[in-house]
Length: 126
Image 1: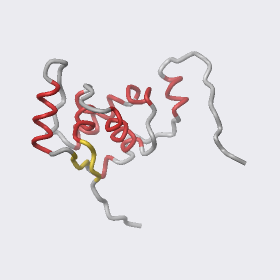
Image 2: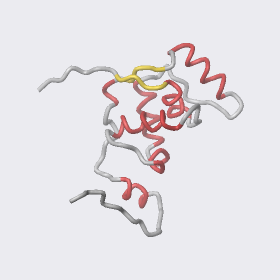
Image 3: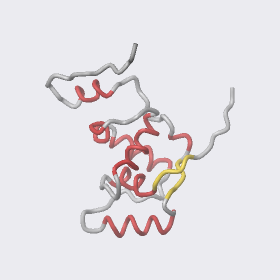
Image 4: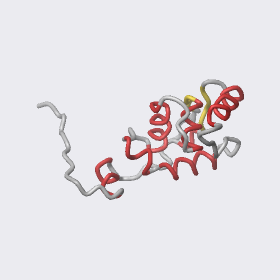
């Protein structure tokens, strides 16, 4: 069974946020990148939980991307890369699901050391 692999466009600032660890635009773009690598929707705490793996995977497939930025130069880094790549860029299709695991958002929260009560809501309508 063979499917044609197509590249996926992502907002450049979201990809840069993932490779540098500095938020370079709206956070939704970062969620899209992390969700693509997880092959499921990412929750806020999972941006940190999976951050190192996301960064490593992106830089392995796209070593031409910057790996560092600071609070002083992030705008220059972002603007330079957007000028180079455009507002959106393609990610290697091999990245889709590369960090997928059997964990759900509650288990990743617990792994991060959250010891409080977790209330889950079942939204299934009967």
